[in-house]
Length: 355
Image (tube, rainbow, N blue to C red):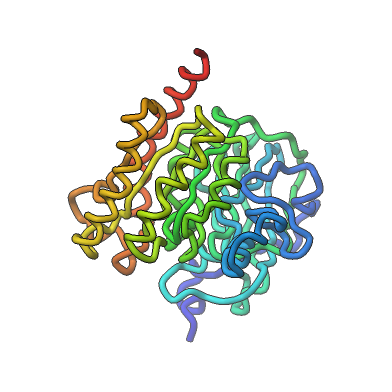
């Protein structure tokens, strides 16, 4: 017997029957798209296909995962509904389906609902929000470890208006590993970028590529080509060896800095320090050396965050699902460490740009 038969609170989807929704394709131009690009082949993509030719097949596949992708709009509708068709089916053994494949919706900056699978085959994901707040600011966070073929937005008794602007309109770019991509948050808005972006009201682009952020020069060149507000360099976990990290980390930064002399850059080392303290020490010193060399060269727009501090001091063992990938608690703690540093970086960059 399934749990839904025992406890109806676990029923997936929403009862949309008999409702008077006007269904709109999310890509019809009425809804603002952030963090990903429309793609004819996969629905959405995080890196343009002509740029993907420089990387492995795996980066190409992971780029179709919509981590960091958001649709935004305002509406005075009495109810808002959502229907999404995922790019592929499949479940991860240690990450909730609501995070890997689902969507979550924020109304006026607060979490409102998960868009979850209907039935057991996960062919469609559905959700509905009954709006009692008048005009609502809506943000839909897209799946972290899947893509979307189709997203329909249902508007009942209302209109759609343009989304308000972020306080920081240029995106903050995050480059890194599966942790950066969002594994293993219970829903997309609980990635550390989600927490940080809501706290600071910033746009962002998630370039986390699970197991495949190797610090390639071509990736640095692509990142440097994006009009951005800041860059968070977080790929320690995916450098296969400390020697690889040594050979790529500072050169990667120098490509960015050569093209973007006034871009604030934050370096982060791995958060699960205790999994291998000796190796973590070596890697941390490599990353810190990149930071130190930049500071000694007169660079005022670099910051270093020691990954060992990201999970805090108490209950660190409660921050991951498997000793490496953060759960929501871990991502929240990461965000609370990263956000004040990013805030300082953005403020200092604004000052430097006035000179």
